[in-house]
Image 1 (spheres, one colour):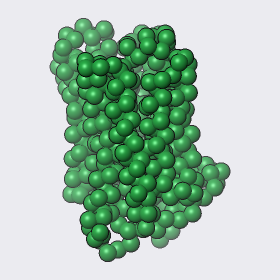
Image 2 (image 1 turned 60 degrees about the vertical axis):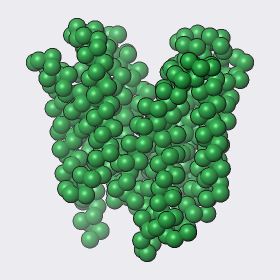
Image 3 (image 1 turned 135 degrees about the vertical axis):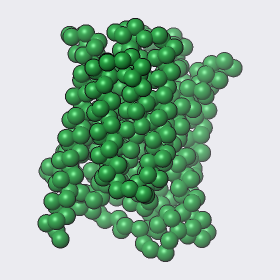
Image 4 (image 1 turned 90 degrees about the vertical axis):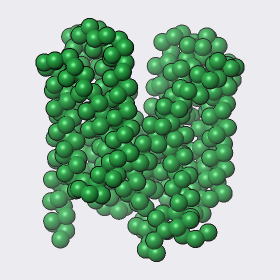
Amino acid sequence: MKKSGMGLFLLVIAFIAFISLGLPDGLLGVAWPSMHLSIGAPINALGAIGIGVTAGYVISTVLSGKLVALLGIGKLLALSCALTATALFSYTIVPIWWMAMLVGIMAGLGGGAIDAAINNYISHHHRTLLFLLHAMFGIGTTTGPIIMNIALNTATWRSGYWAVGIFQVGLALTFFFTAHLWDDGKNTDGSDSEAPKQVEPARLRDTIKLPIVWFGVAFFFLYTGTEASVGQWSYTLFTKTRETDPNTAAFFISAYWGAFTFGRVVSGLIVRRISEHVFMRFSMVAMVVGELVMLLNINETISLLCLPLVGFAVAPMFPSMVGSTQDRIAPEHVSNTIGFQIGAAGFGGGLILVFGTAVSGLFGLPVIFLTNLMFAVAIFVLYELIHAKTRAMKQASA
């Protein structure tokens, strides 16, 4: 296969794998009302399964650098897809509900490794496609509920898990038979130049000693938590504290996620025409302004319109910061750092939602508008600190 054809082939597989990464996230919520009855679980046990998934996710992403060095990206992806498929099948046969939490850990281990490995690969070989890659995840999370809804209407919730599990098996086999292609050092764009050379990852304890790594970890923790907080809490906030019509609120929540997905798709095109730093700074300002307007609530319509504004603004942040890891971190620390960052993102997405529950219980629901703004400002500050430190390091090395 010619280089250009091979490059396109690997990109297509990577994008399909990222769609598959989002599919399970869209299954559980729709399946749970039926699933919890089938496995004898209390309705609130959904959180326990989520904790299991998050734990597995964090473990595998933190260890991803070492796993890539040991197995290579292709074999790691094959094993991770096989593990995810096993978890999806296992959900359908657990005899006792608490075993579903253990299965969740298995699913998190597989999903986290897929996430970190593909991000690592694309950031090294075709950085500007990271934006489009992460849009694929949104397609997966959108498609998952549709698959489960079809399963519930035609058979049982188990059929939905089997359908996605079989798809994961197909991916595992694809990665297994193409494993040698993922580690041969060729650029995915088909050019004759070599891709950035993979180096032996540093020891984890050496990577965690770098302050710039912890700035990045904090950024991803707060970013993903804020993205989830706005998406998950806004419907309740507008309908319960501002008496917004439920249909109107639902429309603007959909607009938030629609703008988010659209932003992921077009961000790669935008950064080809303007500086990525300029675009990121514009996005940060738009995010903070949007959160501030929602807090002040000068006008309900304007506040609601800020939801898609914030959705579009936050869209480029995750892929841009993953892609720029190699600009601020020495090559031997990149794989470890990407794993740490993605692990922090998974942890932050869950913990900040729990934080919102806690503070709203103490001070009332409207306080979440304030905490979202505070997190947005903190993300902006962290970004500026990371950018300033990266620029200083480049100047020092020059």
